[in-house]
Image (cartoon, rainbow, N blue to C red):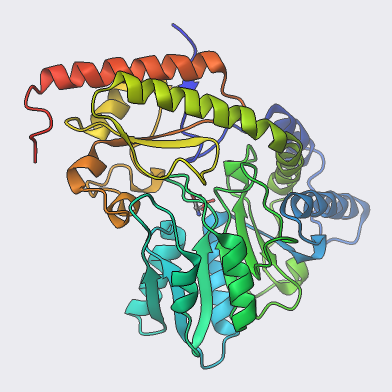
Length: 388
Ligand code: PLP
């Protein structure tokens, strides 16, 4: 059987061979605690410092601004809770209707507890966000604006530069969840003056269980995980040294590979065009541009996205129906719903996400398989298009 074709890179990516190699010594002989003053501790601290520089370089930040965490969700939570902690009487937060649950669920939970007032700004039918609408929602008591750089389901890129500059002009902290942007499009805090930026290593060929939060110098933010002195007292807890070392290598590789993302975009476009041409009535959810180069979200009226996913899996092709975090739940994707995609169409959708390791042969094989699988499922359900 042909090797497995992995096209679910927005859920997680393969750790690159160099990442694995770099981590190995720190899973063995180099087990020192970076806070210790002896030689093994010093070597671990030096390795952390190197990784901090590599992550900072990927994001256009200063190494001292990088705080290592345990995942993207923790980075987002620390950004939001820390900004609120520093906001004094201000308790209003502006966000969008299409954020990842790491942001959306936390903000709704805080609203439920009466700790914040929340404005969720909607997106257009093609998933694009109007920066002016977000900035217009800012009030004198706004403590934070939190908007993702790129959406995990549609791939649509938000106008983060205008948002960051607008927030700066209004004197409101801006948090950007760049988990799906880092390594796919240039993420440069020199150009996008966000105060807080979250990333997750396993989305750019690093290990799972490592995130980073960039806290820009002068940002209105306070630590929330207090305890030990690690991370310059911004995040207590002994650092995951092997994971962070791997994250540094992944960041360096992602930065070096950024020009190659054009090739990924061309592959994605070729695959998307083949599917749209081969499946009658198929539609793309979300704008063609601006979009991260690796993602396409496609609807196939008359079939269930979940059924397409399972049939593709049987053929050795991994895709997703909606975000990985909502797979298994029967609710249609909140992102597609927020875009105004009718429920029936949202349920018929799959997300295909490539990586720099995806080959042209794999993309073509996946496109052909999708066309065949949808045709076969429609043949089983002759009333397609009329259901629900
Ligand atoms: N933010 C976005 C946009 C994501 O896509 C994800 C993961 O899917 C996260 C945050 C959470 O990252 P992690 O899985 O590292 O907690």
